[in-house]
View 1 (cartoon, rainbow, N blue to C red):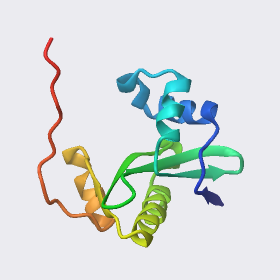
View 2: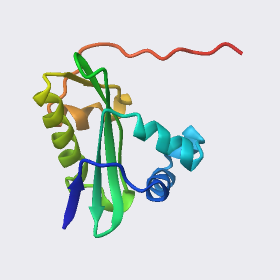
View 3: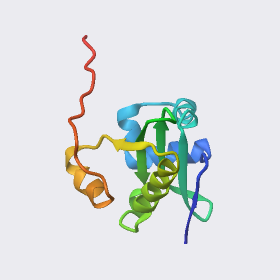
View 4: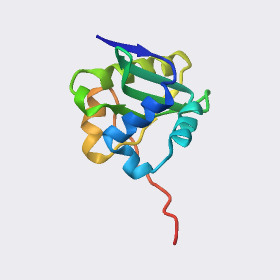
Length: 132
């Protein structure tokens, strides 16, 4: 049975989860830096199978108007079990309590997943391109 906590995971387990999913190939962050980013979140949800971290997600927010879902990760061996859906539900519920406008940026091919969870496409996201 999967257990959910609105709490920070252990930084070693967090790093391993990012490694397992391949996210750190893109981010290239050491454990301490990745953990610091999580610590600065408005709220974090962690999913466990026993004592093993199998998923996490977080909200960054100004705490007044806007909230952004980011870093939603489920270990590849635990996908398609509703873990991501439950983490989104818990994070959305926390945002609703404070009447925050919950938004996210997603890769185009993943938009359908989030639409099934109650999100809708409403704008175009852009990323600042640093000149070399």
